[in-house]
Length: 305
Image 1 (spheres, rainbow, N blue to C red):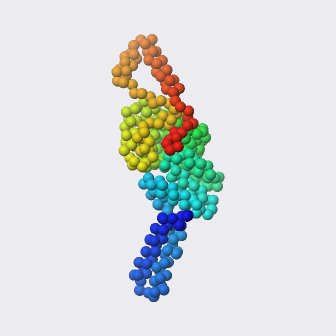
Image 2 (cartoon, helix red, strand yellow):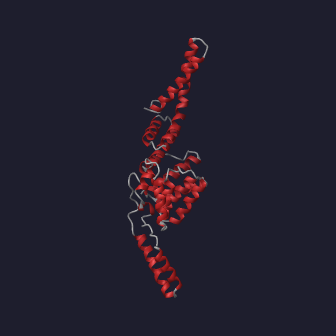
Image 3 (cartoon, one colour):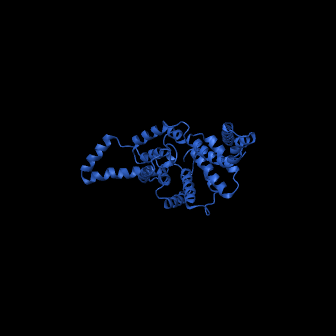
């Protein structure tokens, strides 16, 4: 239908018409003048107000988890785009909605159609950043994903969203301590809990903590995310527990029982020959953990992989 012939455009037209009619009724003028005033706002302002109103509605739909309405409106805007720049902007909006739904494969295909050579540096950095972000979730070409995300950070080093993207990549690479520090940094730069998406950063932090062996704290964060809006993508994921594929295929480290920790301290105080035994065992456990896993390139259609 296009952006000027959908339900949102109809609502805007109705509001403009009612505003014009109200103004005409209040006027003390001839019939023809009042008719002109009555339909004037609709005729003159509809083509300017409707796009602005739809952009706000698209943002509202996405933030309120009304993904079906958001995707329909984004596609309507895309279909009515008349030039390359507006089409690329519309494609970016479609990709944002698809990412909010967890459809990273579809978003990546959409992003691949955007040509950034003639775009403004800020737009270019956004496209590159979210392209690397989708690749990281899908486990596709992590080296290329790192180049794209790093390029975005060079352009906007204080953008918390891009720091989150790098944290996700470090998770994928099994570099959990770095991922944790980057997530903390991203929250310092931008404390909005809705960014990049509601529940996403605590969900990623849970995986980083689990990879570091802090299972209790990781589970606590997952439980908090699971209590969010039931339509949120990350609320749904949190209810399913940890996704090992998001952790570089590494098995989460188990927390050492207190008795074992006490035994480690006693061994540390013992002669050097005894000291070598637990250290060797720890190295073997780490090697086994790294060897355990699945193929890193696989990813489900609607969840991070």
